[in-house]
Image (cartoon, rainbow, N blue to C red; front, side, top):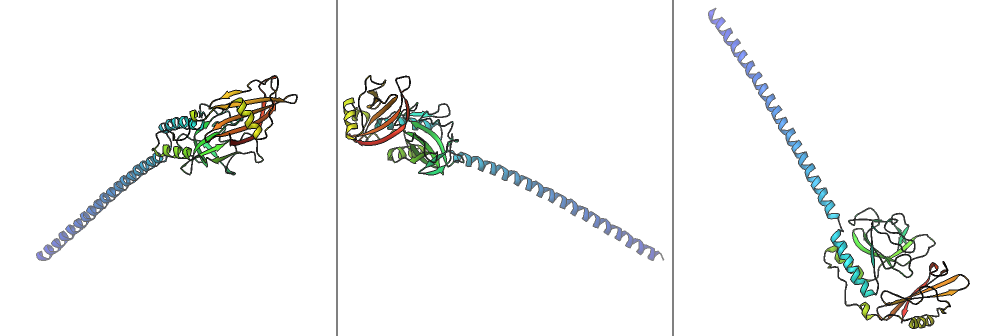
Length: 308
């Protein structure tokens, strides 16, 4: 009987110890699982932070890589345009957000985005950009023009980035068109295109190719020669009396302006500008007399370049 009680007690103790051991094992497993989950969550959170950090860094690098224009390149272009203008017998001014053009009623860059433009007869959009980036077809970083105040016979250049590539656009348009757009074309001047591209790539010093004829190599046009050139082109010119204000006025680069009255209130303005290669550009503008002197000019009716 005593042996029986002893056996029962032994079995009970063993069962109790087994249960405690199982419970301890379950607790250990639970604690281990909890610790493992905590480590996994911490690891995921850390990874997410690292991904965010790398993404932010990547975006920052991308933005920096997209910057195509800066103040140093702007200064290089200013130096280049001064040098290049001299080779062309022209004087160019720079225009930006602090100063608008006044070219045949065109005020850039303030009205750039609001003006309907075309490049090679294709409608395009254009907008001012400080770094060469933007959503417009042509992002304009610099504007140069050799006339101010609507003077006839000028050239308006836009230095742009089109699809990330440097492109120089030019217009000499100063009258309305059937589509009411201001028409530009890509410049055909190789030195200008190459100069801008080199400045953009960091290979340009801002100096133009001086192998071209300079202003000193282009002889000025006298009044007598100007009249002879007009006559050769069958452009009617007769000196009126009294002479309109500004008649026979000399222009930078050796050019000259001739003026004459016609009719009761009419005035004609002839501008002749010497070009390298013994060429001369002729523009003819007609308008009405303003205050009996200077004349209120209409758009240019003729613009040609011929041999001298």
